[in-house]
Structures are given as C-alpha cells and as structure tokens.
Image (cartoon, rainbow, N blue to C red; front, side):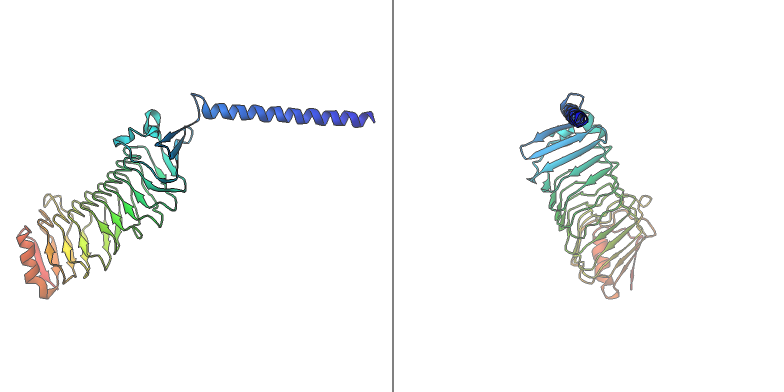
Length: 304
C-alpha cells in the first residue's frame, strides 16, 4: 500500500515538473519573439499586411490577404525595409492569400537571394524587386498576369518563364542576367522590357507575337534572332546598338511578310558584318523602310 502511495506521489511531482519546464520554455520563446533583442521581429503595414523577420535565417515573411499597398522608393514606408533588414535580408516568402505585391516592396534589397511567390498572386508592382542584384531565379505562379514597370530592373535573374503572363511592363527585366528568354504569343511587352541584358545569349520569339516594342532588346548580347511571320510591327530601337564595336547582333532573319510599321533606328549603329535576311518578294519594300529608319548603308539586306 505504501509503495502505491509513493508511486502516485512521484507521478504527481513528475507532472508538476513537466508543467514547470513547459511554462519556462513558453516564457523563453515569448521573450525571444518579443524582446528588443528578438530573433523574430514583426510588424504591420497599412493594416492588411503582417510581416515577420527572422534574424537567424535573414528571412522576411509576408502575410497579406488581397492587395498589398504600395510603398515609397527603397521601401522607406515599409517597416521591413529598415536598418538591418534592408541590407541583410536574403530570402522573402509571401504566404498564400496575397494577390498584388506593391510598388517598391523590396527594391534595392541587394543581398536578397530568393523570393517565394504563392499560387494566387496576380500582379507585381512597379520596381517591386528593382536592383536585387543577388536574386538569380524566381518561379512565377500560373495565375500571375501582370509584371509592373521596372519590377526586376537590375536584378540578378538568370532565367524566367513568362508563359502565363499577359502583360510585362516597360523595363521590367532591363539590365538583368537573363541567359535565354522565350517571347510568348498573347503577352504584351512595354518598351525596353529586356534592354541592356548583355548576358542574354538567345531569344525565341513565338509564332503569334505581333509587336516587338520600342527598345525591347536594345543593347543585348545575342548574335542571331528570327522574327516570325506573325509580326506586324517593330518599334524604334528594338535591337539598338550604340556603336558597331558594341553591337552583338550578326544575323537577323525576318520571316514575316506582314510588317507595316517600322520604327526609327531599329538596329541603331549596328556592327558592320550584320546581315538581315528578308522574304525575297519583300526585299525592296523592307529595304526602303529600314534605310529610311536609319539603317546604316554598310548593313547587308538579302532576299531569301
């Protein structure tokens, strides 16, 4: 009988000790989360956006339902853009529920290496990830329809799929580290969308694309390009080069017989060995339009 009483007493003591330990751990976690020297900081932006910053993983997590409000340049109006977070953040995770990432949300976060976008995201705002030099890759969710002007201008992105995107703003990928890009039919592109992408080695323009916008591929690194039969308009400076020495484009094949609108200076001061191949029956018409737009006389135009 005494042994049973002793055992029950020991069990009660053990339970009480466990409760004390759990309570102590809870207090420690609460302190870690909320104290001035916290590992995780948090705050609220414009009411509907809650953010968390983990100092150990250097990760910002954004919890927003619906549309995130726009911010000021360099995230000055957004709490997660202050002090240490601004310079040290390496990863940003957007939780499911957000539909729009605001203007300037993470612009100039120069050490950011990874961004996780959730399904359900529809639009990315102006300069949202401008000059994120170390951001090398990103996966766009299927519902994404719009990428704003200068959204990734100057970022380190090396590859991207725009298959489901309907609108890409002016300068959206200007100055990035893209190696290859496919221009899908049904997507509209603002001016200079891929300008100054000097690492861009190949471009595929899908059949169905109708307009190549102004400055779209100015000062890029690829040497050959084929313009499909569906194209009806090429904007000014679309493949612009500042000088024959800086120009990279050596061969252009124009398959389209439907081009009615030619911009000025499409190829700029192209390299001297550039050859433009055009449909034989359109050679006279296209040659006249290109020369009128400023194509140097040393550039050869040949029928095919």
